[in-house]
Length: 109
Image (cartoon, rainbow, N blue to C red; front, top):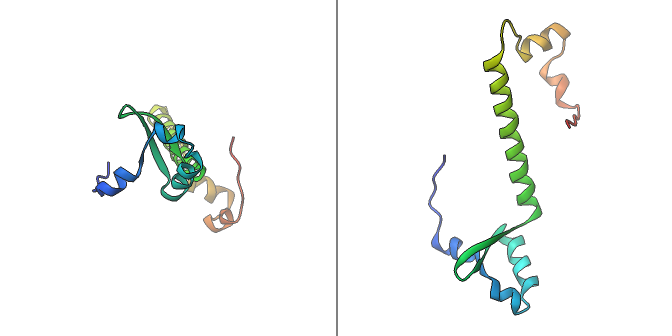
């Protein structure tokens, strides 16, 4: 896990009280979310919700999906009984190079 120092101003800027929504500042808050990426909504100084930009949410979901796929692959490799071949061996057997794959769009469901 990478630990980096976060400036206290960044933390303070990422907090928003629920009372600001009650005062009709939702549009302003959403603009702030677009600018900094995420806001923690507080009620009675306790976090009750997290607001984030759609792009930040998509980044997080893609990263999560990558981790799930990675751990599934690790589990399959560990459970493999007998011989299995690497992707490099498959590509070589089929006569496909990495550069052949660079321009291909793939959609995995």
